[in-house]
Length: 247
Image 1 (cartoon, rainbow, N blue to C red):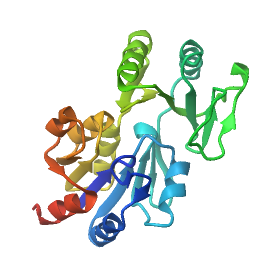
Image 2 (image 1 turned 30 degrees about the vertical axis):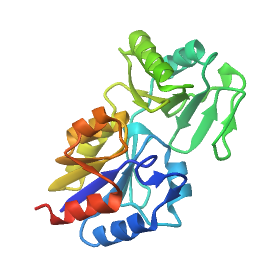
Image 3 (image 1 turned 180 degrees about the horizontal axis):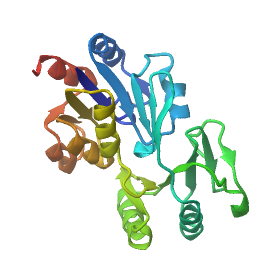
Image 4 (image 1 turned 90 degrees about the vertical axis):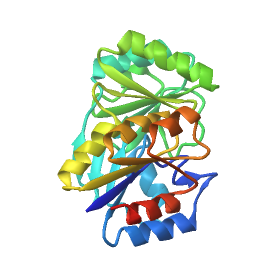
């Protein structure tokens, strides 16, 4: 059996929409194989965007911290230690808004400015940070150079306890040892997949490329990302054509 793990933003969801040709190709691929989402977003966001298009066979969310099956049963989760999360937020939140994925459902926003979120819960007081299931902490920089600087500084101060990944101007923080790649390997073992493909557009997808048997990036991906993938394609439906003919 084959499976394709797909990033969401910039891969399946491009320029504010999901292409109908990609959906058609995914539905055809799912007749004999598995198609799953592998994203930095929480599961609640995925369902918001995907329910009108297709049903994923598995969900790797919050940058590998939260894995669910087709029926949304939780298969795996890894949370950031509460004390580490609090200390990290206190050190970095003054300059950059912090978003917390909690229990795969809620996004708690530790900042006054909120954009592009669906019904977030806002925390004003640090003492009210939830003490349960902090799966992922994300922040957004003003430019790529600043995002790289934030990523490096967080690694320097907290690298003993957490891992940090960059997706363009976004920085995702997860528990130590967690990544999209580790989650993909978990999925391959769980479903007894013979050949696992991965597709993504940015730097945080490289761990996924490294864990998959074959990988796809895009013609619009950064050159460094393209160099890490097996193939470079224009779309998901082109990648699926490759998967179906590659034996």
